[in-house]
Length: 432
Image 1 (cartoon, one colour):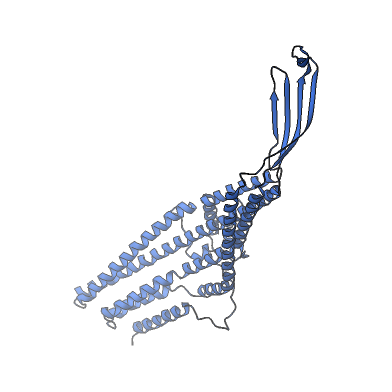
Image 2 (cartoon, one colour; image 1 turned 180 degrees about the horizontal axis):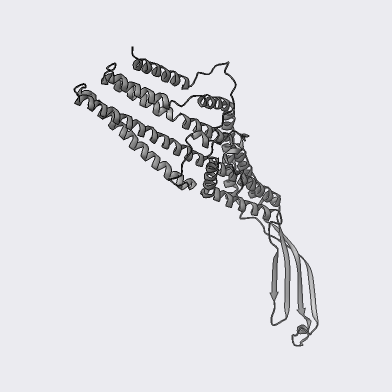
């Protein structure tokens, strides 16, 4: 067996062993504890941070959450005081000079004031949680766009190189045929392989163009700006997990809905208005004297009390709608908290899988060597073109899958970081 065939067999065994190692292992009772997810040092940290900052500033959901928080903060400040504005009632009398002035203050009854303050504060807390999650989601979307951009770049490089190798193989087959040392079938197979590689390269170029457009729209990254070569360079570094953050938001929203229900129930009782009134009357008009302010004036004053009788409108529809909203929010919070509890149980397994994937070497060099060994074996007559064709396709397929290994690891890391709400997702720390 010549060195080319031996090298081909050895490289095939190496690729098969790496594929088996990359496959997910069956869970066992003696599974080793999960190691921390490794980080990849990168000189593109400033680029990643700037892209995330741009994505957060451009995300409409973040702006909507900020506006909602400002509105909820203002509503909480308003609810901290009186629930109703004072009322001034002034009346001027002509003919008989009689003037009246009244000042009253409506007061909430049935605990409506306390319920309004509690509901406003609950809505403000939920709005703050929503803004935090909106920023994290925007940062995660930016990182996902970067991962896709890098993966598309790597795929285009892979198929560009594979196309060059296929072209060289086709030219070699044509040269051997012209020298009378080859077969027409070998030329046909080589041409088909080159066409397949060209089609894959064209598809990779389209994917890269789409990824670059997405990066420009999301993060403001120009198409000419170079990206890191390793997708893991854009994944968030391990940091303190805030598992339960989405459950906390759901619980806050359920609390706000329950507070709104209590507010609607308390608001079914109309407010009570208390105040003072004062009346000035020209006494000269009663004795037949001309009306004038210089004439003797009679003054009257006293307290006032006004109460609307809630006999017809009792806010039954509003109470019913608030009750349905409270029940729906409570059910949603239960579902989210149960999902987060399940995530906490499997996060260690996912973290261990990511760590094991990080230990896998990038097989680009081995794949190139295997393709060159195949060409050498065909040239030496140790393999026929028919035998080499499926092997070459297998190597190319394994190379394409292996090239996406780091991107898959980066996406898995990002999914875990987003599920656990890692603080490192947003490098700005939540600052506007």
